[in-house]
Length: 55
Image (cartoon, rainbow, N blue to C red):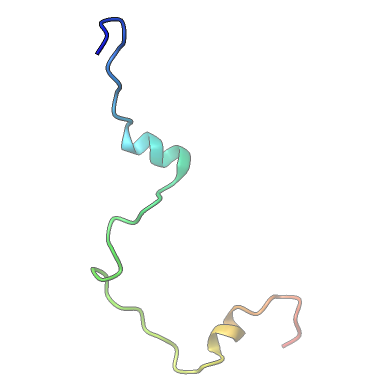
């Protein structure tokens, strides 16, 4: 390494997350409790229906 060049610093994780947001979660999906799936096949569609559609 040349003498006039300063060594690079490792970025502060908190500062990077503050600017860019958290890219990866701290745990993976296999480490978390499984999510319960709705029993009604159309439930996702009714829960995510746009507000401008008539019910």
